[in-house]
Image (cartoon, rainbow, N blue to C red):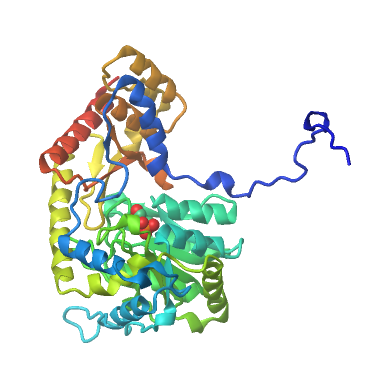
Amino acid sequence: MTLRPLSRIKKTTMRRNIVHPGAGKLKYEIREIVAFARELDRWNIPITWENIGDPVKKGEPVADWIKAIVSAKAGEDNSYAYSETEGAREAREFLADRVNRREKIVSPGKDDGGYPNPVTISPEDILFFNGLGDAVAKVFGFLRREARVLGPSPAYSTLSSAEAAHSGYEHLTYRLDPERNWMPDLSDVEFKVKYNDSIAGILLINPDNPTGAVYPVEVLREFVRIAGTYGLFIVCDETYANIIYGGAQTAALSQIIADVPGLALRSLSKEVPWPGARCGWAEVYNRKVDHRFDLYIRSLVDAKRLEVCSTSLPQLCIPAIMGDPRYAGHLTWRAAMFEGRAEEAAAAFTNIPGVSLVKPRGALYATAVFDPAVMEDEKKALARFLPVSDPSLGEFIKEKTAAVASDKAFVYWLLASTGICVVPLSGFASDLPGFRFTLLEYDDEKRRRIYKNMAESAEKYLNSR
Ligand SMILES: Cc1ncc(COP(=O)(O)O)c(C=O)c1O
């Protein structure tokens, strides 16, 4: 057989469109902004990374006793083996036991407050993933295409993007209200659920990223009531469940979900902290109350089975780390640390006309919101600027901000002017102009300087016309 040279083969365009309908919906501004920050290398601007929620990268030392546990586990051959698809048995037994020990919520001054008994689960109701990023991809990726999940706005973009990509449409959202400490607008939730029967589930993030809100038990109970009334399941992202401060009171989903089907998502990333472990898990509640929910959960396990399992070592460390008598004190110490930083962030942004910041009460972030009325006039927004070191940098930023959301324009100018890299709120499925930064900088002096610098820049930006 004589082969024709490749140059003589007539090429046609690809005969099928191979692009997934949700392809354009995968947005992760938290890291996309990094590519832009890198472009500023040309002007030798040192960058202060305030965009990514990695406590270790921001200087928090990992506790020696935790490192010792991980080192010891790394010395065992078993840590190098595959684990069961659902996750290492001893880790799932340990976590299921912890869920089953959660207490019933009692209203102060009432007998039982009308709250249900917490659900109990078995190790089979725990499923490990390679970080919650993996969990989120599967939770939404294996949902029937036309089954929608209503989520918060603003929202952590992995969740909102995954839902949008799974459906091929814009993510459906309910409003978190900055005027009411970022509490969810529950009438908006119920209205949307009632009049859109494609909604099959509700997503909540508690404590919330990016707002730092922590939902009181009554709010969680309302979500459960709505889900129960309209036949929905609940996904509750509890990544930050052990990072709550400022006197905030809340509950785990398992404590108030009663007999509604649901999933809680938890992770080692932020509370140990060990984000590089890529280790998170889903706790499944009331799997058997609806056979379709059960089949859906089975599809998540089957999907994991195709990958064999998630990474073994971090799972095997869980009983030793979380079961250690020092762990509770470790969590309390960290919560107090973030409370102090939340105070600092809030103090830096007080009394700046046109910008507000609700003091976070959980998680690792604070969100500043520009008064939409001040930012809404695009032409005025384009005329705004912050002083930069080099006129060519000013021209570059002017060009880059010509066709972006007004809060993104601020974020670009902030980067060029101060080197501080934050994330525009428009990157969190939100119409509100603002930006999110972290409470993570470990160096106290540096952190205070960053907050002061950001607040002064926001003020200068609003006045620059
Ligand atoms: C609300 C929320 N969910 C999930 C994740 C992902 O965490 P993991 O490191 O477990 O993938 C994050 C990370 O920032 C988060 O903020």
